[in-house]
Amino acid sequence: MIPPASAELLTVPQVMACLQLGRSAVYDLLRTRQLGSITLGRSRRIPTHALTAFIRTRLEQEAA
Image (cartoon, rainbow, N blue to C red):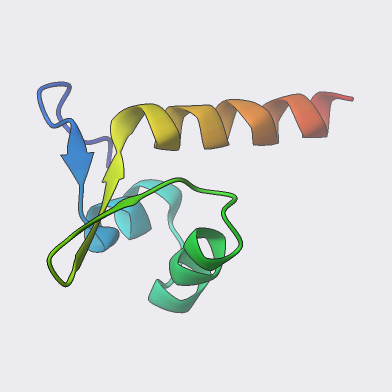
């Protein structure tokens, strides 16, 4: 499930669905800073550009 182009900030469940990963795996990516995020209050949001960059980096690593 690809998030709509108009959504600039994604929730963890949206990223989970997009990457087909579990909650712990997504939080591990955030904790290790492989996936960028911002904190709004007590909520974590992932900018769409950070998700795109993460996917692009992973694809480049696999191609190498």
